[in-house]
Length: 275
Ligand SMILES: O=P(O)(O)O[C@H]1[C@H](O)[C@@H](O)[C@H](O)[C@H](O)[C@@H]1O
Ligand SMILES: [Mg+2]
Ligand SMILES: [Mg+2]
Image (cartoon, rainbow, N blue to C red; front, top):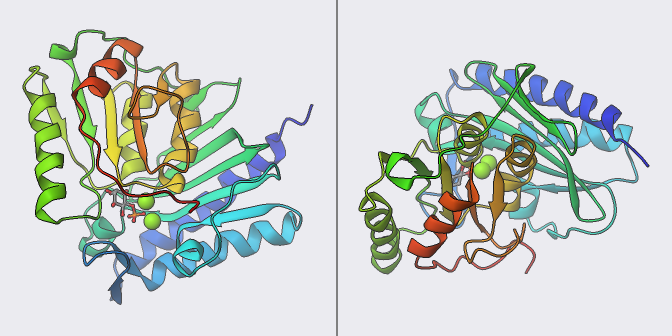
C-alpha cells in the first residue's frame, strides 16, 4: 500500500518555502481586494503563494489533482475525486495578514480515494510546523501532539471563527451559538482569525474544541488529519461524519465535548465547496 511519505516530505518543504514568502510579504505594501463578501479578503500574495505551491507540486506530480482556495475563487472546479489530490490554502488568515496580526498559516492537505492521508500547517510568523500522516501520529516541530482529554465542558476553552457573512440574520445565529457555548458555562471562547491555526490548538491540547460554519475544505483538510492523529475527533456540525465539502465542522479532544457543542448549534447555511 502506498505510504505517501515522500509526498509529505515535499509538502513540508514547499509549505516552509511558501510560509517564508508570506512572512516576507507581510512587511510590504499590500494590494487588497475582496471575494464573496467585503470581509472575505484576498491579496496578490495569496495568488502568488498558491501559484508557487501548485506549480511546484504539478511539475513533480503531473497526474495529481489540485484544489486551491484562489484557483477555486477564479472558477476552477472544486472536485474531490479518487485521484491523489492536494488541498491548499496558501494564506489562511488573509485578514490577519493584511493587518500584520500574527496568526497566519499555509495549509496543505492531501487525499487519495477521498481519504485524507496527511496534513501540513506552517505558522508564517513563528515558523511552527504542524504535521500528521494517517496512522503515524501528529507532530508540532517534531514533538508528538496529544489533544486535551477534558470531558467537562465547564472546563473547556472553545475556538470558533466568524466566517464571511455579516448580514444581521447570520450574525444573530453566530452570536446566539456563541452565547449558548459561553452559557455552559465554558472557560471561554477565542476567535484568532485563522481556522487552521485554531484547529491546531485543538490538536495540541491548548483548546478543547473548535466549531465553525463558513470555512472551506482547504481550511479543514490538513487540520483534520492533525487532530485525528493527535487523538481527537472531527465531525459534521450535526454530529455525523465529517463532510469535507460542507463548509462546516466540529472538532474536539473528546467525543463528549464535541457532542455537547453539536447540541448547542443552530446552523448557518454557506452552501458547499463542490456545488
Ligand atoms: O480566507 P482565509 O484563507 O484567510 O480563511 C479564513 C476565512 O476567510 C474566514 O471566513 C474564516 O472565518 C477563517 O478565519 C478562515 O481562516
Ligand atoms: Mg486563504
Ligand atoms: Mg482559510
